[in-house]
Each structure stands twice: as C-alpha cells, then as structure tokens.
Length: 180
Image (cartoon, rainbow, N blue to C red; front, side, top):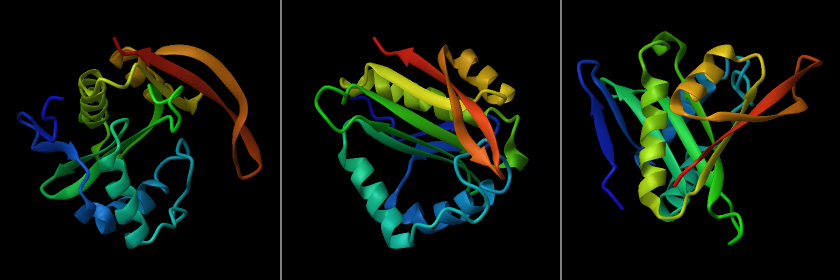
C-alpha cells in the first residue's frame, strides 16, 4: 500500500491526512459545530455525543483495519474537514463500504471536500481490499451531489423517508463508485 498518510494542497495551506488518536478532542468539537451548520448531516448541533476516550478508541480501531479510513483536513492546525469510510465487517462485504464527509461552512468552496474524496479514492485503490465505495446523501443536496458526480460517483437509487428533521421526511440518493 502506498504511503498516503498526508498530502498538502498547494497554494491553499490545506493539509489532508489520516486522523490521529490525538485529534479526538478537537474532532469532537469540530463535529458538534458542523452539526449546526447543515441539515444534510445525520446529526444536528450538539448531537455528537462520544467522549474523547470513545473517539480515541474509534480512531484507533479504524487505523487497525485494512478497509476503514478516517481522514482530517486542517488549515493552520485547525480541523476544517473530515471523512470517514467504513468497510463491511464480514468477508463477503469487506470489499465495499460507505463514507461520510463534512467541511466547516466557512471553508466551503475551497476544494477541501474534493481533496478528502480524492484521498479516499487513492487509498481505496492502493488498499488491495476495497472494490466499491458507496454513499448516501439527501436527494436535495445539490452541491454534494455535484461534488460526488465530479469525483466519478454515479446515482444508484432513492431511499425514501431516509431522514427525518423536525417531523419532515427527506429522501436520500444512493451513489457508488467501482474501484478496479
């Protein structure tokens, strides 16, 4: 597997790297902020309830797996983006998995999401395990859908009433990418 532990995006001061156990506290703070910045996430403001110890264990367990990844984007030492990919737990599904991605609102439009996804795709190709990447996004998340299509993901189907926010249901779009 190639060393994809860290990349720097030229001229933007953005570092994309694998998440470290020592990021746990800052990552929890980040997640609780972004939860309030977009209704396209599966959690809202202050709804990320892991302790620092639990987050450290999650990161540590992710680092041990050959079909899981946690990536952090930082600018000037501040976490501004995150991507997590989890592959299947059983032999028959270990080759495929789903990811979630987020970027602090003040950094939207800077290519951070694109770089996080590119990192994951490169990692997937070099993993020797991952053969398919899946994602779900709200069907009205046009910015996200355009980003995923630009990266090479294709639409696979609609999951109705997949998310509920304040009593209103939202459909999700299932998208995927084959890794050869």
